Amino acid sequence: METPTAPGPDVPRRSLISGSAAMAAAGGLVLGAGAATAAAAAMAPNGASGVVQGARNGDERHPFYGEHQAGISTPPQDHLVFTAFDVTATTPVELQLVLAKWSAAMAELTNGRPVGKVQPARANGVPGDTGEAADMGPHGLTLTLGFGPSLFDGRFGLEKFKPAGFDQLPAMAGESLDPAMTGGDLCIQACANDPQVAYHAVRNLARMARTSVRTRWTVLGFGRASAGANQITPRNLLGFKDGTRNIKTEEDFAEHVWVGDEAGQGWMAGGSYLVARKIHMMIETWDEDPINDQQGIFGRTKQAGAPLSGTREHDVPDFHAAAPGGGPVIPADSHIALAAHENNGGTKILRRGYNFTDGLDAVGRLDAGLMFLSFQRDPEQFVALQRKLGSSDRLNEYIRHVGSGVYAVPGGLPAAGNYYGKEFFPG
Image (cartoon, helix red, strand yellow):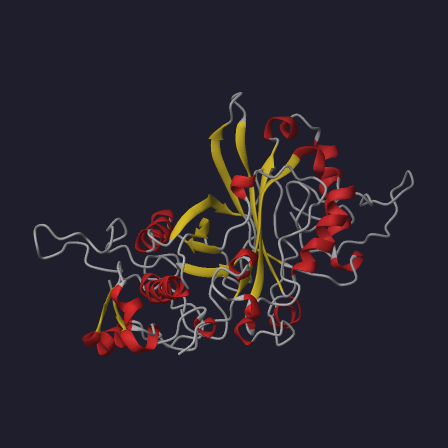
């Protein structure tokens, strides 16, 4: 799809958490006064400006520290675990502790290290890490953290840190949203080239914060449905190439993805806004549709992925080309025509979606579709496109949006000793 369619390391005590009360409550990660030196070494940046090579094997890794969080401009990996959480903590100190522990653990996990001992020395000791990814390596794991609008609702005194205009997405055509699969105070996007590595990361993050957060909704993606720079374009479950015209240049990232100082919040500089949409596809109905209609719906050929006005996938669509019998070669209500930046005032979004399946539904049909993930400088970029698609896209006959969330993704951490959301708390 071109765009959305309505369709236990030790942690430095002073640098990560302020206050003896927070330290006393710590669990999961080992927090201690003598840990600062060891933790700084364990969490040190790997020094790379891009992927640490070990292409496609377990040693592939992406730098954790930097101007932006990994998992946005990172070329999409093969597998996804997306999870939204509700914060059940009742005090700012508890929330602060979760964010500090998670930030430290994310640094470890993305470097292929456990978050605690897999096999404690004491026979009655409880493992600090669940162990299912022990010795596997990072497999290109990235962990991207976002804050939902509800986190700033006043429970933790964070109202003044809420970016201007940051609210839940408005209702839009083509939705049939399940409340159990919408929203969330926090989200984690875990992507890796091995599904067990991604699962292990989210499992352990949830485990170490189990007294302070609970899982709200989650989606397991088994195949990427978007392309980054130098990647072959994959296919969605409708069989069409997905992500042909995705954002790939630094110039487009700067203009359309990365937040500057316009949000009025320094913690968002270098960050982005994540929109998550779980899109159910009517697979069986689609499979009975003739190829000419399928191609007219997308505006592309199915095999090559070429726009109907061209012959190759990356040919620039000609929306003015006329068909022999009259009318445009690319139908005006096709997905590509409605989503193209040429027809939307130059608006672009970064798509980072994944295919998913949840088995069979109650009547034996495939419960499958697209976990649509997009990053943009302003959520309104998505809303404007989705409103247009929701009202006119012919693909709407075959899809329904059943899950939804929007999250403010802070900029990256500059170095060890920092944690996401640190600006929210005094001291």
